[in-house]
Amino acid sequence: ENHTYITNITPETSIKEFVTNIKTNGAIEIYKGTEKITNTDTKIGTGMTVKITLNEKQREYTAVIKGDINGDGNVKLSDLSKMKLYLVPTPIGNLEDITLRALRILREEVDVILAEDTRTSGNLLRHYSISKPMMAFHINNEHKVVTSYAERILAGEKMALVTDAGTPAISDPGFLLVRECIRLGVEVECLPGATAFVPALVNSGLSADHFIFEGFLPHKKGRQTKINEIA
Image (cartoon, rainbow, N blue to C red):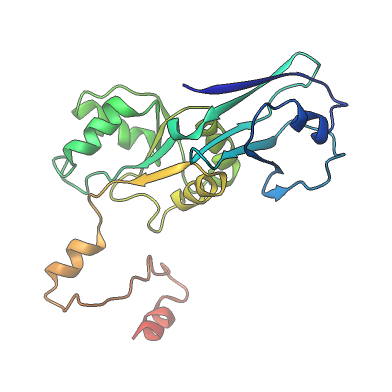
């Protein structure tokens, strides 16, 4: 992989000094969270994101500054072309309803699999003799872990996102990770595959020339109101 290393960073290093030490002809941007830092006298700090765009090569490098900045800190800018988030649809009911490509991606292409429920996804992986580390990504932890997962992808890991059944990010917290990766310039690739509403639509006999997808209806309060609004 193609990396650039920046050394000798201290707590007193300004963004201006930091940028000067980067040997590149590319455009350099520095962010704190989603906010672009424009004051070059700001001190460089942990958690800031460094992004370099080399327009002539259509290539981006990026790094998230981690750990203590103590004078020996190294910042690694990794080639974004090596990083990717795969959205991998999984079977709905029948374990055979998964594509050969999805199995290859899970088995060969990714370092980590993000799962809605690691127990459910574990059953699928064992069925196809796939052994990969899994981490949880679901409605109860999405806001806590989305940044750290995106940073791990930035650091060079390839990840696959799966749900218990169907395509990730449809009425699903997966969209938060997709949005964060897009913001950081990381490639996101969605594989074709199982999804619940399309088979239901085509099997209904209704015209599928156009349709509206409303997601999950409220379980109790407001359910009938929502149905009336749609009707």
